Length: 291
Image (cartoon, rainbow, N blue to C red; front, top):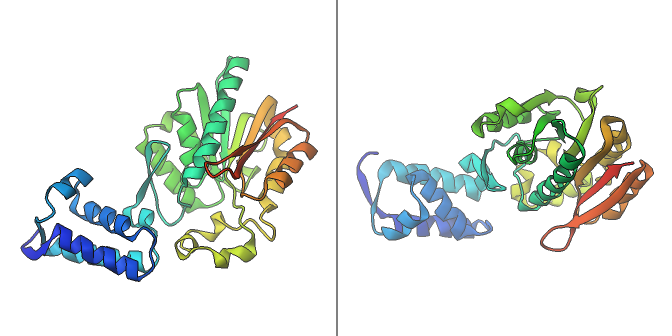
């Protein structure tokens, strides 16, 4: 990769860490390290085994560019173009929300529902992941081993393209359908055993107060309307018409939205309504069964 500079891996890392720290970037040292290892194409063990190794000039330039982007607020996951979710690597672009560890709670709840539904139905289960974004939730379910066919939908063509890329990347194209459209529109006339969704749920007025890195993510995937509940009203009220008997709906929610969303489930006639918490003890998933 060209001539060597006088800089070592360790010295350029320290520079990057200091730059990000000065810019107020959270976890500056960690982000600087991950970005450098990505540029060099090395593992963490390799990085710490040879800290005095000289770095090529071309790599220095690439790293400086990446550090400038991170300092300007570009999320590390967008810089790398990938992230890990539920033990699998997902491709990312700025067209989709960055998967959070909290969303793995939705996968856990959905897997428990799938296990129960598999005991009730002998046929292949039909599962819908609405507002799929990168496809991380639906594709995690598709890869779980259950006899299920997944439909992933999103209103954003760019987001659906990312989901399609991840479908191929994970080798799941034979059990996944992708459909463009808003909420229930692309699946009119169909029935599902399980519907999952991580819709936008941040109140519109709060978007501007979010961490700068979060504001780099697509507003379409964040803005839940004036009170953050706009999408739930449409999803929950119409869900029974799209569910098989004993079918289930599970949605990710904001930390303060549990009571409101659970009330919507009740009003729509759902039974066995549950609220599941994340590791911080905050409500994160509301689920129910069609009665």
